[in-house]
Image 1 (cartoon, rainbow, N blue to C red):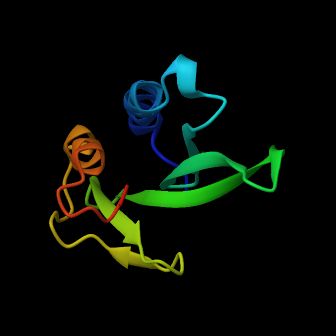
Image 2: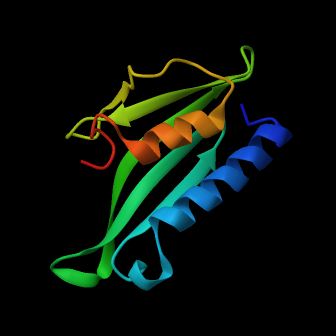
Amino acid sequence: MTLPPLQHQLAEKLLTEFCARRSPPELRDKIRVEFAIKGNRVTITENRPYFLDPHQWTTTKVAVLDYDAKAATWELFCFDRNERRMPYHDTGPTADLAALISEVDADPTAIFWG
């Protein structure tokens, strides 16, 4: 299932702004925060040069936002140290995508950015 067009546009807008804030131009050769939309899922990643070969980049999953079309809500997921996806318990399903992105940005539990 794919995101409804309005949700896709909203996700693109909010996450493009979020990633630009988290990846200032002067640091993009050292760190990039990016997102990908696939189906009804948005994955946020942190990318850094591999220390043994700076021409290669490593990718770490930061968060996943899943959209439930029937309920018209988003749900936030985080990852453990083995990159296993798990529900983020400090928020529940919500129609407010911006609030979930703000939660990832603020990271009050240090699960997203450490």
